[in-house]
Image 1: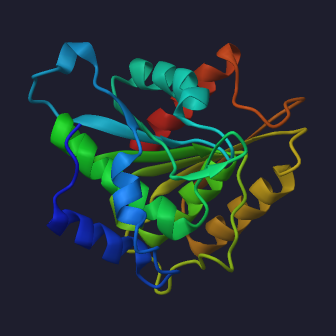
Image 2: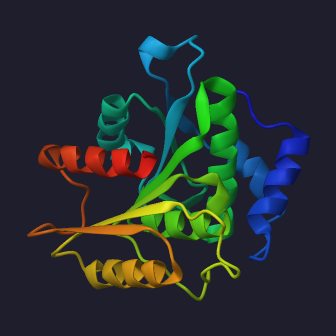
Image 3: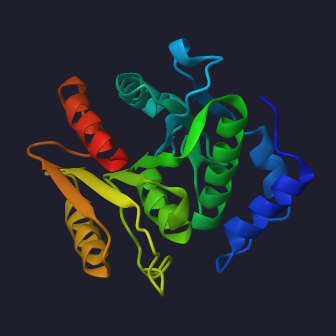
Length: 234
């Protein structure tokens, strides 16, 4: 995979750090070495018609391989390009996004790489995530609301102090499809995030899965992910 040019890197660093904690001096170099699992539907390879892009962020102490199967199945059903980036900072046997600024840098770089490799429709990008990845999806989307058609946080926490609701609000909000298991320890945080975003004017849906803990939906939940993603892309 080709990496971003020095000019693009400079733009990404500035954008990711805007109004937030500055990135470490060596972060761009480390991020350039972090893999991105990128899938383009076979039937559209070499084609011209732009496709939706799903970016999926893994949880704390995890990696792309842990969420790839579920989001690969989702992207396949939607006929979408899928990009699953890896965070940079080691943690708990895997990796951590650490800060919203670092996550934003990786997400912006992922969009740039996906657009180089595939027919991405820049107006139909979904940012999804699980656990810490879901928390980062809130932060990145609220810092760059113009980049995303939809946001799909699954079992995440939105920290309003770290990333306040934009003021003034964006002219066009991304749509939020918030999901969480009813037995998950962060279920009330998911409800609170939905309330805060809805009161700010964002279009929000929330789905709580009865009897489910802190995990992605299994096979029987893929249809729900598909329906949510299709609604986000409308």
